[in-house]
Image 1 (cartoon, rainbow, N blue to C red):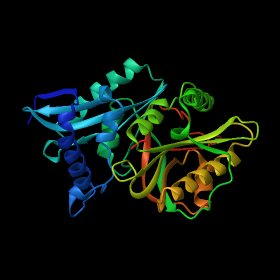
Image 2 (image 1 turned 135 degrees about the vertical axis):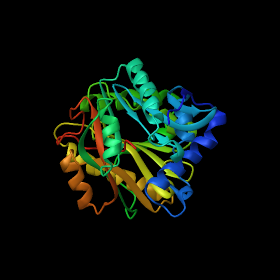
Image 3 (image 1 turned 180 degrees about the horizontal axis):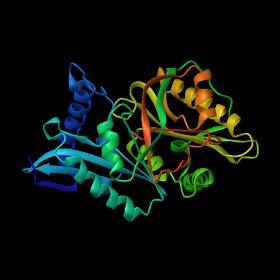
Length: 316
């Protein structure tokens, strides 16, 4: 049965239903006894909408919301998700219409690389995204460990505690660091969103010369992408080049120390296995994989998923 699907920008009044559908869809797909318990008190809808309402979409069928999607603008890199469809409308072309509009957003942003995280075992999902030019590459492991680090002695700052005059230079330093990893990669929107919404903080570490050595954008606790008890590193990277691995270790220390200072019991981060040494080092630090999926890229190129890159992120 064909449906007349309308896609439009999300509105504040859509958030409750979009959140309900997101939980129902994922919870049903993975077979939870209570699908609505998916993600607990973590949030992926309200926070992403408020980060950039212009990049949040809903699909309607018969005037009722049938699904939604969110695009994330990381400078030259575009990411989308969670894309979720009410189970009543699975395999009815609703996801395809949302993806068409999402690709238009990426075209307006002029991204040079786009990506997503999906279920590695689901040929249906992989096939759908291939129709839009995305190709599966390496697995991404979403990993976690208990917080057990003592306060770090690293030269560390928190973005939220910088003065107004200090914040913009810090943003520019972050842009330079990430741009040296992948041309045009820029996480300022994520940093601004965490700061404005009070979702957590951005951790900045420095080397002995005072240069930025690494950054980590962290969500903390309920009502964020972390959930209760968790410090979730949505994006973290060390400056590339000689010593990047050691800077990465210091950054992970700083994140764990920050989590402890916030009274959180677990640290969560995603790492693509194409960044082999970063992945290996997280295993050595006793991070364990909770879930894993496949990263799909458009075009079919590594982007920043390279062996020389020390970076954690999560494209869910």
